[in-house]
Image (cartoon, rainbow, N blue to C red; front, side):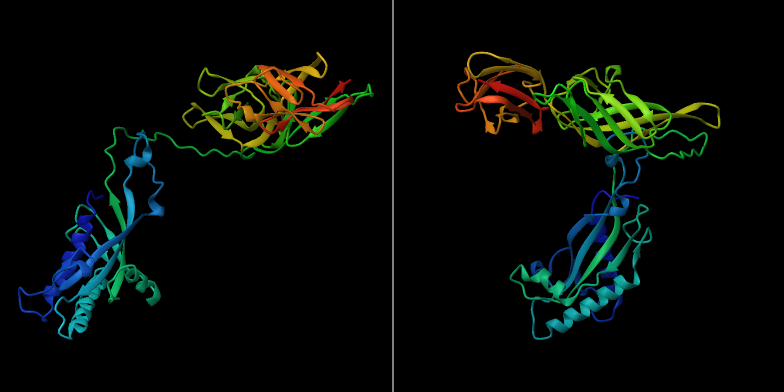
Length: 416
């Protein structure tokens, strides 16, 4: 049911047209015109050209399942192609009647293809192959475009599509198991969906001893902060929360330290931690400031007709949230110099340009030396030494640290 050589298809159609030419009474036996697999302007004899000028994969047959478990599956299913041909006639020695002779050739060939719209084992392609021949309905202006790219004049042509041609796949080394029992399972709750993420940040405004709080949506949380995901379908079953990052090759799984809690079928809470484990591995992934996505996994168990138990896994959509850089301490040193501790300022996945520091509205410059006025230096994974720019003095000046575009929670410093 598949071919190895596309030329077999072309030869089959050429044989069909030549048989039709022989069957007419316009030529003496043995002097019938030939059909060539080329454009007519490259043919050195009188005859017809049946030229394959384009091929495309059939969308209908792209996603057929493989017969076994070989990978990649696409290599083990036949590749379906649609082939596009140009039929033209050509007379070499034109004594004035060439165009009329070409029209005769074309009429016979087009009639032959019209009368045999389907190729099957009764024709030379054989091997259980079966494909259709369809005359393309091109407008005159579209047909002319095929000739304008070269130096040849416009010639009478017809354009055909042959579909579907299957190319031979790789030989399978496995085969899907036999189905021994059937069962229908209805999940009335549907697939879980996340529609929102939210967290609350508490901070002290200078001069006010009462903490204030602000809700952030989508969530932007430092390490240790609780994030709530809202949606629907967080019903009964084993619940896991997966994390997705563009820095990782696969999702990460949250462990017990993340305190994953199903508050209701519409809310799941977690507490952001500094590490997670990449799914299916023992690799520990650091949670650095930046953009992430959360995905809820629900696993249910159902009893099959034969009494065995089968697990069904449902995955939600991916929903974004951010991990913000945390500031846990600010210590004043020499005049205008401060040491800031927090999470996380230095990591293999962080570039120099990923970190910006602002005092008020002034941007500080990253340096690898002892920072001068208006500069800062990253001295460790959790420490930054900064030197306030000249001319900035006063109390309660905002300190802002941004990592990968995510800003830290509100902090202030006093500059004598």
